[in-house]
Image (cartoon, rainbow, N blue to C red; front, side):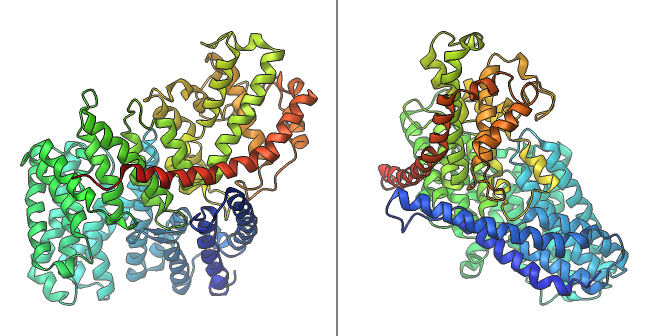
Length: 637
């Protein structure tokens, strides 16, 4: 096999192509004056994305995957070169994630190679890379609340790497390390690896271990032996970061359910962090903004019982008023997205005041506006982490924004092609339903609104529009245009029907459509598709599920924009596929329905003019997000 050096230039092209694809897929509308220009821009962009994607797939096939599939030992220089390429795809510290899944694949491969190399330095460098890879993938998969095993797989990998690194923290082993770079990696991960506990309900033992290990990392800064060995090391940075990780532990109103004595110890650390920060604010604000630090401190004080929930909410609103609406770094996301979630989680949902209802609705409009201005930025994965939490604790307010509106607007802001796909599937499913009602009305007899054609058509459209809400938490995965999905990513994608149904069942505006979202990827005869354990034949909405499944496949097959890796098929191509799959993948009555020339004419109109109109609708919807955000004016204090 040729040396990886000969492939580096091509791999660097993959990086630049991937960055450009991310930017092109969600263009800003700031300089666009009308909907027609926006639609044209998106279509032009996705033609370019398709070209870049083909180039990227070739680069991976020729210049990366052969190295990952080769089981022979590689040289130290090859390890370094592949590692450097992986590092270019992920910066877990600065939220700049171009391709975390490929990075995780590279890391897993290189870890085995580094163990075989016999080089302590290469092994330590790769353990560090593995922890960063697993932390990033764990945070992506933690958004899938119904599938904790996926996140736990990455957590176990990360902890295995972290514990291997911690063996070098023993003083004799630490002092024997080959250089200061290795020692810095070990010290950094003494604190960083424990962030792998984020986002999950912990056992009491895990809660105490989490805090105890971070306190050990904190104590390193006071150990004279380590300080003498590493006088150049930034111990102030080490201390403030460790304190930050400690204060993150009770995030989202103590979602991990830390016991009270742990919360009290965290509060003690919060006092220390506040004091240290104010000793040299000019230095520390480069590491953590004061407002972000204060959110952590006030939460720790509240959860330890230092002040009431009313006082805590008041502090949160003071900090919210000071947020920078254009800051997409971690501190900006903390105030713009995490803070509203913390506020909402303290509320009594059954007894909301009018002021609280107003504030909740304002949070949602602000969050959408923030997401809209996110277009093309690299920190999407971390933004989705915060936005997913906000959707998890969503409260529907009569007369305010409902959950269906929020999810659809989020799709429009974060990924216009999925928004257009949702609208298109709604229109196609409604069209199919209208023609089927005329030919086979008996198929709808099990529906609650049977006998009311208008109600059935409305139900079908709304259910179809909601069918992909489960893709919201994994928007960064469905935006992988530059290559085919890895098996690990396809596993994530297959979770979206269950995720959608779980979210939709919580809210009045969407719960009636949950079964359609759950079943839209099952085959008609339940012999294949996903989720595996679902029998759609037993559901009263079976006929609507089958129509949405057909509409979903028809739009996906004929769309050459949102599916840039594939040339769009013709409707005639799809009809042939439909006939071949009748009775198995597709309902047996669908081929006859498609034989109707009137239906085919209606569908062709939707697939051409309807799709153009849908892209125009995205433009208007995005414009509306900005206008709506102005309804709430300045932050009232």
